[in-house]
Length: 220
Image (cartoon, rainbow, N blue to C red; front, side, top):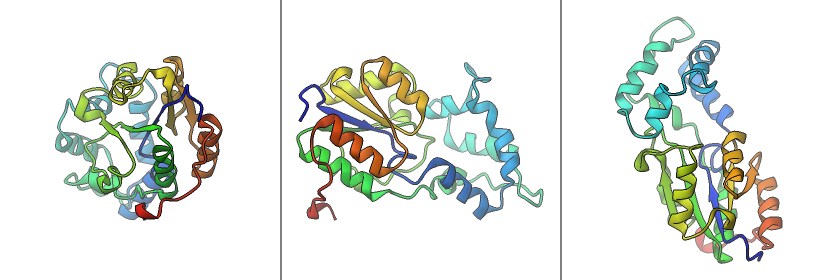
């Protein structure tokens, strides 16, 4: 193992789950929500035009109530027939389409068995997580709304490294969003932009100089 890399920090949605676009598209399709209208409504939340006054950022830091965000978002959306979208349980329904990618969990378990520390670092919308998978996979779990910070704020990366007892230079960071990876690299971490489980597994094997292919039958 490369002694300079002693920790791996992973995102959740889009890395340990089915891709963001696919998962959101499945929710929109199943609930008959107008997809094009959804994209127009959500664009300001993600294009930087609301920085400093962005409800999504506030939600991810745990600064506003999930139910309030659901009501505000539902009021902006519409069904394909023009009807209203139900607000109650909106976040739960949205994230229920994010299905686990077990190959990625097995990869991180193999990393952990090799002696490398592992951590989850996720921006939360107040959604639930499949925590039954976490104890066997992670040494530390950092959820944005629980710590009052969010990616790509540098302080949440540093907080996660500290939880592992490591420096940023000791850690590998995995995310499916380029701007989140870029911040990690600016802090001295080794960034891996996730596209699929097989590619990320090969990258981790290369960076850590360990075999992360073997599945632990006890984790099945």
